[in-house]
Length: 284
Image (cartoon, rainbow, N blue to C red; front, side, top):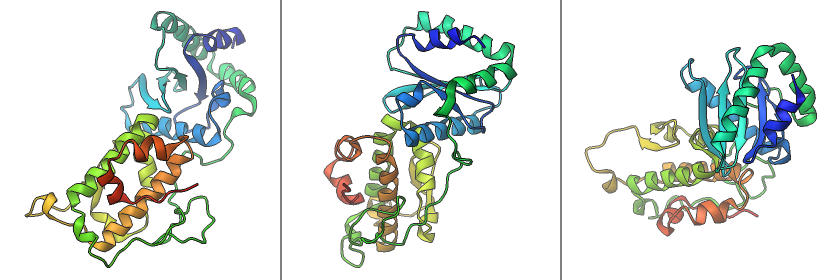
């Protein structure tokens, strides 16, 4: 593959970096993106790509989602190779489109050599974790424990006030609205696909959460039907504690990717009532 084709493409105004994958499940090879995103951010971006590839129709050719204030463009080439291009929000399409076509053509003309050469260019930028794209369920205790030092543990805090009258003050409508507002505020930076995947991978192993439905956009709904409006049905103490634990675990993972996550998302994206409903502990 001609090195100048990649370099010319990367030098376009608004293009931040590219990555190449043999298919939707192989390890990506980053070029340029590694100088912009750290390892955890690249992993989150890769999870987003994998989710797109696994959930969109097999005949899709391109897809764009929002990631960390940038646009992530996915292009499926004729040989099955996945090209990822990370760009700034403002892009000169008239210049970008012909250069993109040139890059795609080079990648498709001689796929085997193109991928091999791209790997050499990417060098140490490749993610080396074997199963980086597969979400894992963290070992989360039923309640936060101040002594836990695990990276996937919940933040230092005292257990929620479970056997008090607080649960009676939180309706299902209020709680679901708070959770969905948290998803929407986070999706502004990570995109809906990554947000939904992060919710699933951070879910506590609590049976009381089985009644909650989470869709592909990261939105929550109550699976069980009720004869009363949701604003009249309160969340029981056990489920309330589990939901707050879930929101805390989700926020911890997102804070590793989004700088100033608490200030930008938790405080600006949620109103005071929603913050009080979720009670996400402050972490340093």
